[in-house]
Image 1 (cartoon, one colour):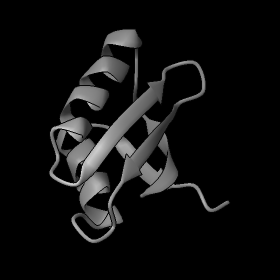
Image 2 (cartoon, helix red, strand yellow; image 1 turned 120 degrees about the vertical axis):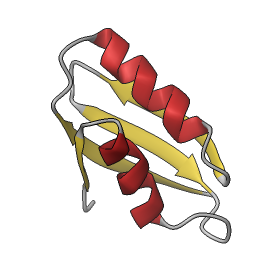
Image 3 (cartoon, one colour; image 1 turned 180 degrees about the vertical axis):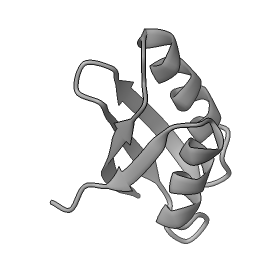
Image 4 (cartoon, one colour; image 1 turned 90 degrees about the vertical axis):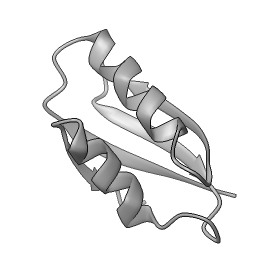
Length: 72
């Protein structure tokens, strides 16, 4: 499992964060998503053999938010 952080743009409230968590966690290969409205980030734990990081970005963007991987 890998854990990566994504910077999120366009969240307006805590409900936005919950929507991101639910949608990302429904993605096959994703174990957990934890979105922080206050920090404008999402931490995603996923299996790289089942889902690519680009898929996580697409899922978040499909909800109308901007998303980019934070290089650590």
